[in-house]
Length: 81
Image (tube, rainbow, N blue to C red; front, side, top):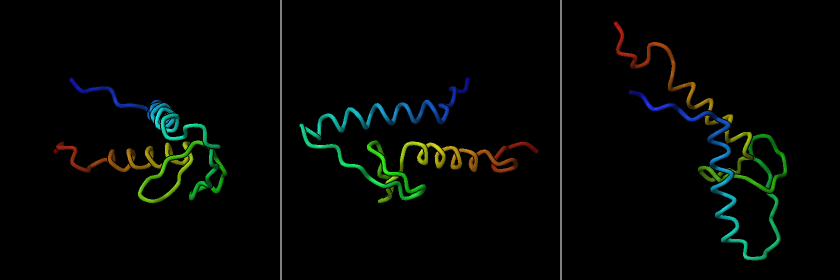
């Protein structure tokens, strides 16, 4: 049986929880630093640093969805034929 794939929203929620827990450990009373998303330009408190780029959670979810969509292209390793 195949395992159910995680939706972009579930993945985003999981990442937010993980990053929030990590931030709680690291901050130790420091002021939260706002960062600017390198894709959309929004200034955000919660972000992910991926390959040296700062991404807001929405842009991260979009990129993950785009990446997942590219992996599901018809005719790419489907084995049919």
